[in-house]
Image (tube, rainbow, N blue to C red; front, side, top):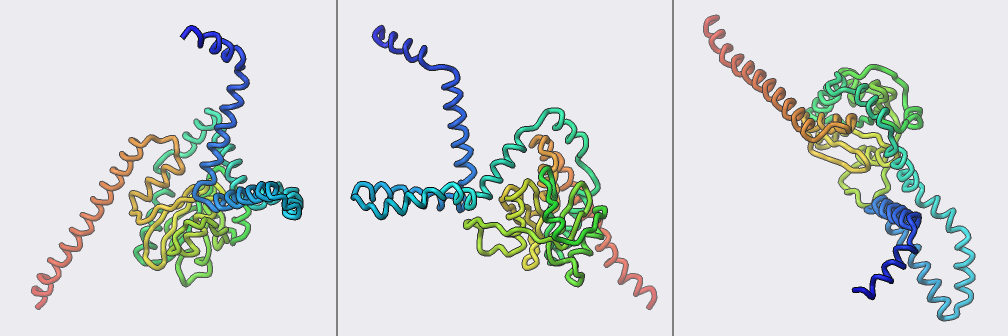
Length: 307
């Protein structure tokens, strides 16, 4: 034990704080890079680059000068190839870095500016459930911190207040605006019939059509979230951060919208609000069922009196 003390003192004195910080920063960057490329096509590309490097080492060991010359010439353009092939991943990393750097004052401002219970939450949920019951396809994109001006300009500008009637009318299959996406920015319907990028993720199910792939694609390129209604099945889905949640009902959809717009709320608050919404929906269903039953009971007696 006493023999190890001089060695430990030598190591402790030789290691400076900046070296530790240097190692921690590199480890963090590698960790974030692995998180970023996991489950994407970038993994296969990294494997391809690794195989090329192994091929170069084999060529050097066997003395294959022509192969080495070709690979050395191609290595000059590796930097440009990385930028082109990984442009989506690089953009996503920079966007995530920018979103994570937020001042407490800005966070407080967002909390005060967007309280839960705004009318447009209900309007969107009601429109989505109505369209789902009628099996009318819909795609609604909600802008958050990252601007969607490029996509807004690709569609037809509306700049209208969000309302149930407007959303249901836009996605009516007999209107000219139903094809494409609706983009909602700053609490208003900015544009309709917008074109969005399709996801390039090879792990996406082949069962998903263009509408769902567009929703995933735009949430990969920005921090926006999307509400999708399937035209074939009437299933309501929610997309955020390139991930898709399906088979949603009204209260669950409202909770996901609330979590996306108000990330500062705790899980307990979200559970309470969802329970409150489900209770309200149950009461409405009971009232509707009671009125239908009473209507059927009254109708025969009225006909009997008339007879």
